[in-house]
Image (cartoon, rainbow, N blue to C red):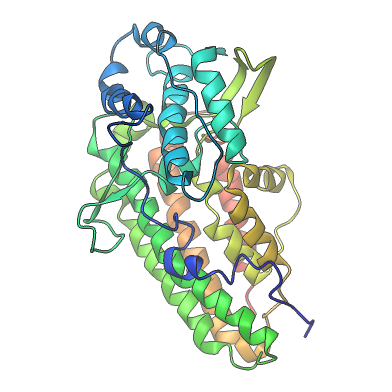
Length: 372
């Protein structure tokens, strides 16, 4: 077994075993009333109503968005993330307003603050999965779990609860991911200590957590109508195609929209299980999605990729059980993609700009093929 070390380890930081890929503390739900950014909260609350007005873009062009001041530090990070959420939602609302043709120019008063915040967060300047889900929730009972029934969203594009539910199901899945990351961290420690024969309990712990994620994903139809999703709020998380960021860059740019493919959970599992997905245009798209993940999550995935392969006859039952749980997750995801998207459109591209049905099918088949 190759020697591995704890040097500069993201995975071994306790926060991942406690929170998964969710923020180390609950996201900030509103700026202090004395903050220069507090006006963004009111704009954010009004956004679902404003988007019913054909004059929304004129309204948005006239907004005075306060510039982010100061460095991005551990102390200011929750505020910077909320700033990115508020401005990111505004930008995507502007470009992809339902009932209007997609805009090809993002006005400077939105483009400049979004680009600045994104740069500080080391990510592309568009609302992505982190801003739409990871930083976009609050607990109803502060001492309760991060789970459906005790969480709500901070920002939305539409008034319908369907969008809240869509986001919150992903938040619960991410919270369950703490069990997966905690187990992988324990396995890494045991490999460091040369205790590779003692992995079974942690592998079964991963399988159980993925099964819980499958059950959470199955709950999508409880509060999300397939006839509404495609037409109402999905357009707002679409990719940007040939959009000029006024005052930032005169070159028309392309950015991938928000998609679950920007979540770090499944890529971490793929890296841990050493599933060899065949190189294709689709896997190139998937690799490109990493740019839209928080930098520390990208580093964690790379760390897990560097871990030794735990696939062996000694771990056969648990290893295959994890693969089957992952395949079950992909099957449910594929079914929802068919029900909520594919049946309503001839466009093969998902919100991230990828041919999603083909990609989801490929990932499922290659996961199943990895069984011992």
